[in-house]
Amino acid sequence: MTSFLFDHALLPGGWARDVRVDVANGTIAEVVPSAPRQDAQLVAGIALAGLPNVHCHSFQKAMAGLAERRGPAHDSFWTWREVMYRFLATLTPDDVEAITAYAYMEMLEAGFTSVGEFHYLHHDMDGRPYADVGEMLTRVAAAAQATGIGLTLLPSFYAYGGFGGAAPTEGQRRFLNDPDRFLKIVARAREIAAGVPGANVGIAPHSLRAVTPDTLRAVLAASPPGPVHIHAAEQTKEVDDCFASMGQRPVAWLLDHADIGPRWCLIHATHMTTEETEALAESGAVAGLCPLTEANLGDGIFDAERFVGVGGRFAVGTDSNILIDAAAELRQLEYGQRLSRRARNVLADLEGQSVGRRLYAATLAGGAQALGRPIGSIEPGQRADMVVLNEEHPDLAAGKHDFWLDAYVFTAGRRLVGTVIAGGERVVANGRHRSHDSITERYRSVLRRL
Image (cartoon, rainbow, N blue to C red; front, side):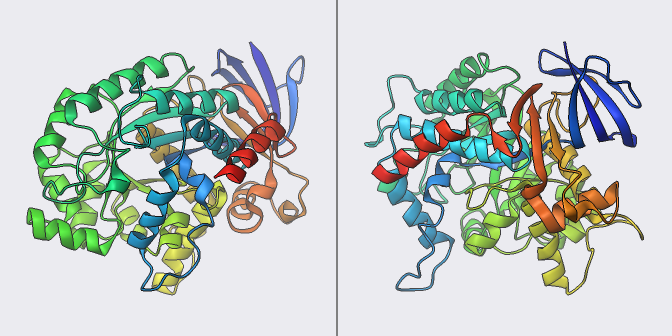
């Protein structure tokens, strides 16, 4: 048993002082407010449950900044994708492990304590499977163990190059599987996850353009219960192509044909009609939003005000990892709503409600659901994931309690993160991961070679 004593903590029942959290085998065993110090480890500051990151392509961290030069024609998600294909063509398993460790380290330093790895880089450079079909997944798992971040593996099913079973391009050859081989990868992912404390496994049909209705049904029918994630309606071209091929928009098709429910997480869901927005909220599925990546790629703005207003559940992810910062994802989510509506404090429900607290609480709940893990609150039975903000930072001097969350989300961001405890281990102190230097040097060496 390890015990921590926090100056302040946000518990399910509200703010509390002098909170002792007892941890056994990485899980919270007991929470005691107004506790004496006794033999607990004192952790100065303001403890929050660590945010889940529900959508990550970790290898893309190493290409951040490489697609910020204007091309010869109109730049879009689709031209960015060609840069991404060229970048990943030469990545080795060692490269992926080094890049993923660096991305996960940054997540922990920036307020995320768990991650859903939507993983589609399965095969060797020529498109042939490795001797171990889960070779790349073993590297992701190794990076999670090296950093301490909580892991949900989401092997991605990618079979075609476009709607209607279109032939894949050369740039997609490292992703491709038929249902049988994909299910072998999922089985291998479960073996790998069994060796990572607390890890979980789901599946991730990449998108409706990368599968067909028949292959999607086959994979869903053969997969054990667990999270299901899918990209949907990220781009207007995707919506138009889906309608032309399948007779419906992507979210409408999924709602009508895929038994969408609480174990599903629809990533982006940017371009929905009013009817789709309301139906997705009613389904109980989570909208996995990646506001910084969506802004970087020019995707568009999710209709969060309408979705939340009818009870929709959401979470956030870092997707392409162009910038890793938990508070910044929440800030961009709210700011996108303000820009599109020319209003302020859009995602608060009630007069006087803190927007920072509202966003943080909703993202914790949606993230825990989407990753299918006991995370998202400081209470017994949950994974011991706490992010501790520096109470002495001047940006927090003007108030307390919910003001701290408003200042974290809208003012100071990751500069406030002092200590991070993940799975009961203190992995970040004074804003730096315990293996910061070695992980960074390995990452730097990979980038120099690439």
